[in-house]
Amino acid sequence: MNIGARIKELREAAGFSQNKLAEWAGISQTHLRRVELGQADITVGHLQLVCDALGIKLKDFFNEADNEEDISSAIFSLSPKQRHFLIEFLKSL
Image (tube, rainbow, N blue to C red):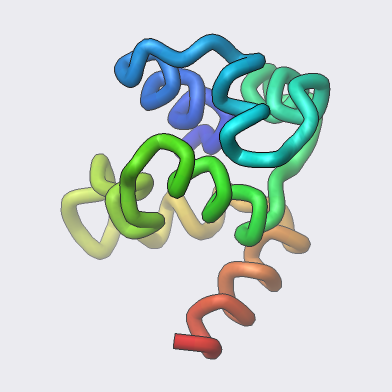
């Protein structure tokens, strides 16, 4: 799963501009743009803020992954830093 492309897909489906989503999520528009373009990584914490702004749960962000193989692929497509944050987030549940 391409995290940036998924954010863009959900943002556009919600009718948000990058500026509006960034403002609502409390992150910089420049960073959001770079994430959508695949030029920057996003932390799980910032991804949670984006999901909150979109009115969805973090698990719904990964909803397109319908089975374990897709989920594994999504996890392995994360950067090492993103995987670390995901593991820490899951431990906190």
